[in-house]
Amino acid sequence: MEKLLMVWVTEKQLQGDTLTQTIICEKARAIYRDLLKQTPQTSIDEASEESFKASRGWFENFKRGAVFTPLSDMVGSKFRYEGS
Image (cartoon, rainbow, N blue to C red):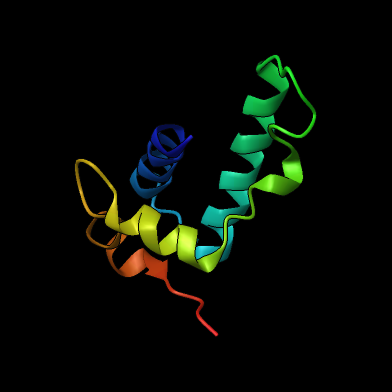
């Protein structure tokens, strides 16, 4: 899911779009939902739309785990952190 999200973030950056933590997390949840729909499940408890929250902690790990280019560098000044 993170690889798909990085592709999307890269595309948005190339288009000059402004990305925020909220926008990225919303897209992450949407990708997760799409992947769930495409993956057969053996148990309802194994995965559900509610099991992935795209929390602040997840987001921080996602930023740190960007494989090719750190997320904060890639989106540069077009990125805004929305911490509370």
